[in-house]
Image 1 (cartoon, rainbow, N blue to C red):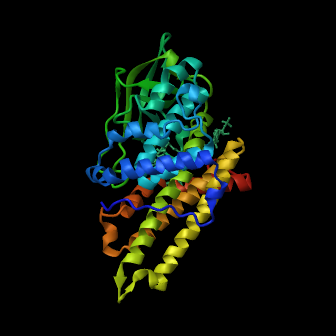
Image 2: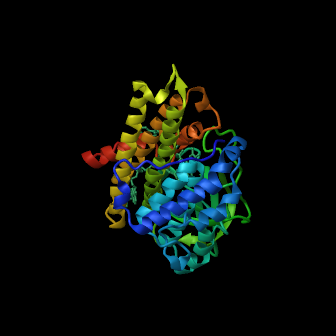
Image 3: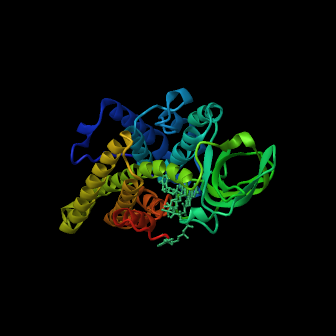
Length: 392
Ligand code: TGC
Ligand code: FAD
């Protein structure tokens, strides 16, 4: 792969809106990605292998629990810092950002928000340091967009719960030490349970043959009469709103992360267009190529402003689920379109692993599907503005 020459576009001087802390956090993440992710990620993606060696570095830049209080091992940062970290990581690779999103927003967040003090102290510091890795089991083979229909169940057996069922498409599952699993009790109410590797009847087979997120490990969670200790139930919140609350946090991070992937594609295409000559001139001099590049920077700038304002609302505790959906949907779609255009600017070179664009493009096909598909987010906006749910 070519050396990482990335220069971040900031067309509307957004840096002026960031605090010194935001810039420090962002720059630390950026230089770590250049040093530790860019040189290795293409090889791992080609081999369809998760780079275990980056876990310690992710923990060091505060990517595991950026907004979780320091007393539990988190970085104690605000939501804009969290977003900037996700942006920088996804600039390197969406699969690496996935690992950080899942650990922070889908594993640490529910333990922090819905767990007991004992559960927080027992699990959060090890998750923040990367000593333990987690995954999040909501999706099932027959229930993806409609998680409320889930059939994974647990029964109260007096001194423990007995868990049965299966989850599919679970990021980090093949190597996770623990899983936050959403299952129905005997009354059909959804609860979160912490299932730990080694519990009898719990297995995590890996999903192979992916053309997308190849440097991220994806798998299943199988529960065959797993005895879960009662102290592993998250007592603070139940019902579908509990897992959906975690998704709000992860989707917010993706809205920022997608900007990183788009920036990398744009920056690569701009540099290539200025260096590559055809018909005796740099291809950047052709109007059709300028149109592509000008539209890319316009869309990136709009996405940056959307994410920044959403970050302010999130810091104030005012960001709604529907606002988060709009930003996730818009920014991922923007990034995917930019990846497709940027790849064309590189001509034949665009399809090779010498450049990051094709990897971003393939990764973004997952990002536009997970955490709620493009169409589901449109329907969340539709329900919000009309007051009528298309799902009922
Ligand atoms: P609906 O009737 O709308 O809601 C059920 C209950 O939940 C409440 N609620 C929320 N609470 C907190 N936060 C939110 N964001 C909430 N959204 C809804 C709601 O008020 C209601 O409460 P109550 O007390 O009235 O019961 O539910 P629905 O069944 O109609 O479904 C709505 C729909 C389709 C939007 C929802 O199910 C959905 O978002 N589907 C998409 C599924 C999804 O996003 N799955 C993601 C799985 S995890 C993943 O992909 C990780 S990828 C790895 C990585 O991040 O990198
Ligand atoms: P389906 O729900 O079957 O949808 C298929 C199509 O139908 C989509 O286009 C969808 O938009 C459309 N559709 C569905 N319902 C409607 C409707 N009412 N109106 C209009 N169109 C509709 N899940 C986890 O729990 N944890 C994870 O860590 C995780 N990681 C993932 C990693 C990867 C790489 C991938 C690909 C997925 C991951 N997921 C995870 C699952 C992901 O959240 C689901 O794939 C996603 O929610 C969609 O579910 P589905 O694949 O079953 O598609």
